[in-house]
Length: 181
Image (cartoon, rainbow, N blue to C red; front, side, top):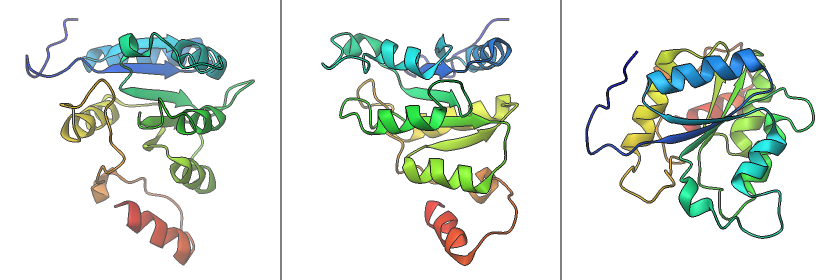
């Protein structure tokens, strides 16, 4: 199947996809390629850190060549969880502005809130759908693709239809959710 870029001026967005499940890695890679993303897949959080050069003391000299625009990671992985990977990325001066999306089959409000509060751009329920990736791509492109290799999306505005329909929550959690909209 051929993929078509929406615009010849559109930058090629590079996604680092992290998942311990071989099947899930293949599915997300296929969906990302259909959505015209450049994709690098790794099987663990530690491999993702190695790829980014964060497993070393010094800044990776190859980061300028990487131009990773988005990191998508499974939440539940052996060794380093997706949440731990998120924290390491957000604590890095080099990579903190790269959006990180957490993927999980568990629809836990506490887990979702924790990831979003730690700096995750979004939390997608598995199985990830093509429409989820198209929405992410549109958001990334709208939020500043003219910038350098890093796409900054922290100020992204969610539409109410983008939010997950979750079980009832406390007034404080409702206020937090509304603040994200």
